[in-house]
Image: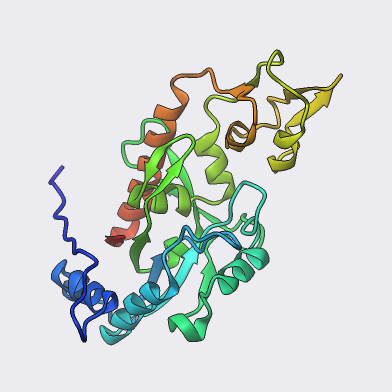
Length: 276
């Protein structure tokens, strides 16, 4: 595989300049003007952030990319897929409300929001994975696959299972429908060490699938209901929950890569990535 060219800039700005001006120059230098955007639907894949969370790119960065895509004749929209876990982005209504609360209003960013996998996370396209080892057919949010061009506008973040995630996680995990996310997470499921459990119920509160239960003041996890999102591991105050399948994280990262490959290759989609 050919090594990617990486363009970057520092955050220092002279008088009369701004980070947004530098962003425009950066993505022009990276070659965005060589892409034919004329009348093409352009999905700008972004993470809108949970309500009250500051770990997301600010809307004015998205607006800068939107303005440039429009100048080049494209028809941009901001998009993401719904989440597996309990929070402000589990279905499209809450997801859009969360985006608006975090500043991604259409008149602030210059374009509309489309939640790629629909109201309940079930609007998906089955996409073949060329040469896929773990995934043969990816379940991708339909709006992403209906788009002609994909721009990944990603922030780097820590994740309990994948380490640090950037463009691949933004496209692969973020582009999967709720069923797709389950498929990526499904290898290796957490177990409870009941000698460490204090029966606080934090695992129950965080689970979207009713997998953890408490019997005789001790937690246990229903393996048939668990989708291995592993958020229970993150919230357990005594580290009583762990995943003993040492291959699960490696498989998860491979699956994310294969989902990304499926999304970018299908229908000769043109990926353009900017990571902040």
